[in-house]
Amino acid sequence: MSDVLDTLILGSGPAGYTAAIYAARANLAPVLLAGPQPGGQLTITNDVENYPGFPKGIMGPEMMEMFKEQAARFGTDVREELGTEVDLGQRPFTIKTASGETFRSKTLIISTGASAIYLGLPNETRLQGRGVSACATCDGFFFKNKTVYVVGGGDSACEEATFLTKYATKVYMVVRKTTMRASKIMQQRALDNPKVEILWEQNVTDVFGENKVEALELTHSTTGEKQRVEADGLFLAIGHKPNTEMFQGVLDMDDTGYIQTIPGKTATNVEGVFAAGDCQDSYYRQAVTAAGTGCMAAIEVERYLEGQH
Ligand code: NDP
Image (cartoon, rainbow, N blue to C red; front, side, top):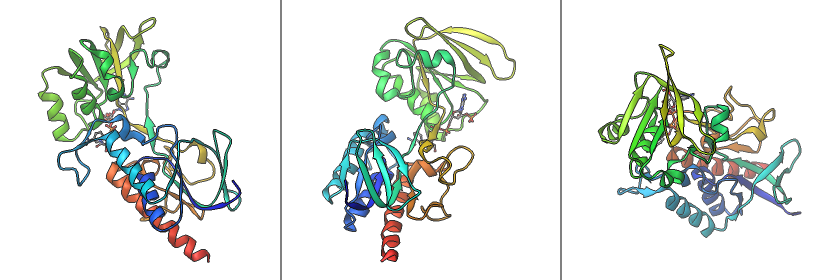
């Protein structure tokens, strides 16, 4: 493509689509590259109950379809494409895609989100998709009448554990401390469920099975005592890491890879590059805050471009 875009958006979660809605309505004709997981993390979640405007809740995938529709309605060019290479060293910026297309753009909005973290055990990697999963919504169906373990003590772990009780006979939550980080309401929901049992101060330290998960090794956090337990599934819900590898060494980041923006803004250390959503937010990580920063990024892009004239 030879034309130079006003703005290109990387990522299609709430931040990316909100940026697109605002940028499109400002006549910036944005191109949005949807990335490896179109719709982002909400497409692998269940009911979204805390997004304002949906008093009865809404399913994550449905909500993201609505975001997409709204962005497209105002003229966003949504591409089911993966941005693979970005050159921010010259202007306009160039963005290459997996299919070989090259875009040139005056500004860039990075809303690449975050991805699930795994424990990093060799057997966990080997058995991924064969009993090991980081997405109950995607894979829960395969665990009808089975015994599954969920690692983590945050809202995700509680949500996944509760969801898995729809299928599994028994769901164990493996929590490494004596307390859970999850909000009280989510904890209560899991604790009240007769199929859920919490294993406090435990860690999954190995996964066994030839072609599918058959058992796990649990290790006690303080005593170090190990035990082998039979299991059909292992679900990880231990947090996420930002998808920012592409920008390492170019954009300022914190120790864990979250892009650093100017306080109160989405502007990064490279002029014309803005970051919104979970790729720059390790603290709130909510759909609504991601959408908020997506809006901010588009407004900042608009003002930046005005200042260029
Ligand atoms: P969190 O970072 O909140 O929680 C991660 C959990 O995993 C913690 O309990 C942590 O334990 C545990 N953990 C981390 N590393 C390991 C490890 N190596 N071994 C064992 N346990 C580990 O992540 P979540 O994904 O749960 O939530 C992220 C954000 O999304 C939060 O802000 C949450 O509120 C929000 N959210 C909201 C939902 C809703 O309201 N419907 C649903 C899901 C998420 P420790 O506490 O010991 O560090």
